[in-house]
Image (cartoon, rainbow, N blue to C red; front, side):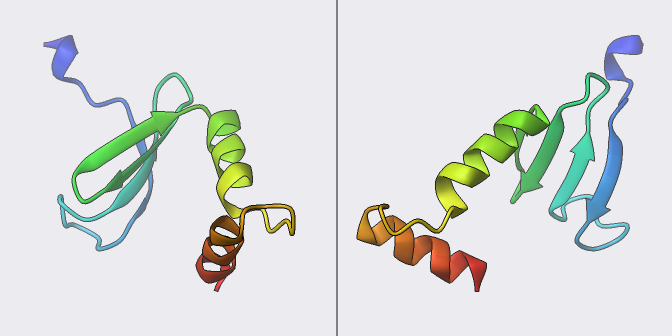
Length: 75
């Protein structure tokens, strides 16, 4: 029965009480899980930061499409 136990701690849910809503959780081992549309990515906080720096860093040396994407995402 232990294999079915959910040990994740939920941090945020788009719609409270909606099991299918997008959400963020922390795993027992400290990974950050992000669920969007029923697909969950889990990674250590350092990997999330690394991914964000690669995608969101606004750097004039980035290829033009990445710079424009970063500016659009940052709003």
